[in-house]
Image 1 (cartoon, helix red, strand yellow):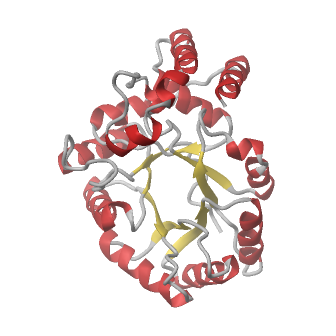
Image 2: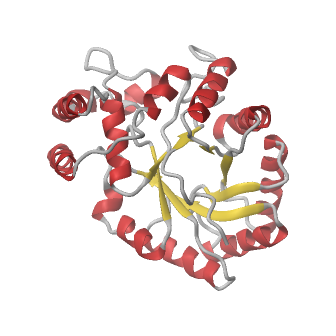
Amino acid sequence: MINPLDGLDFGLGAWQWGDRFYWGYGQGYSEADLRAAFEASLAAGITLVDTAEVYGQGQSERFLGRFAREAGQPVVIATKFMPFPWRLSKGALKNALRASLDRLGLPSVDLYQMHWPFPPVPVETWMEAMADEVQSGRIRAVGVSNYNLDQTRRAYTALKQRGLPLASNQVPYSLLDRTIEKNGLLALCRELGVRVIAYSPLAQGLLTDKYSPAHPPPGLRGARYGRQVAKIEPLINLLRQLGEQHDGKSPTQVALNWTMCKGTLPIPGAKNMAQARQNAGALGWRLTAEDVARLDAASDRIA
């Protein structure tokens, strides 16, 4: 079975697409902006787009499906199933997948992921449901998201019993959140051949050098992360410094390149063309081992 992520080292996250509550869709960016971000990403060679049924209450999938149909070139599409506590059977996943495919306008999806490992349904039950859908032809590959070491092993083992690989585990990973390095999950995924998809690789904008204590992130992000802006200034300074040493790369581009140097597949979000082009500037060059070590040390000092 071919992993649709093979050969890919970068993607586009679509959490912001249609999300009014957290990201403020419709207040500063529109569908036209999202389309421009999508097209700029494709032009840069970024063909993986990650969405979920809950992003924008399904609007993200609708946008992505429409943009992909009109693109006229292959797009690798990943979406997710949310195992809400009231979804108690394999049939719930089948129905949710059907609804996602309807919104995407597709007969099948490249990568279908468990969004969270919520109880009460066991990991094995959901992997059985995923394997059934691979067999049906509605999904090409199975992934998980936010799974810890034990849950990842269980998912891998359950799929292996059906003759299938676990394609990916999508987890938060950035210079401000290196949990998967510290707890062994990154090493386990390498051992098992599971691709690590890094979401929030820019720590929801904190590593972009856009914010300051006087101008924290807006809305809920400001309430959640605003106090960190002053604390991370030494790291931002180092990102600037290293960027200058690599032909004027931005802190955003250095931070994203670092995640790739660690062997992960980052999926930064983009709400407009400028953000998509900025993200794409992380491609086509590489930090040195010394650069990575300096960033690791600066990150550790903050933690």
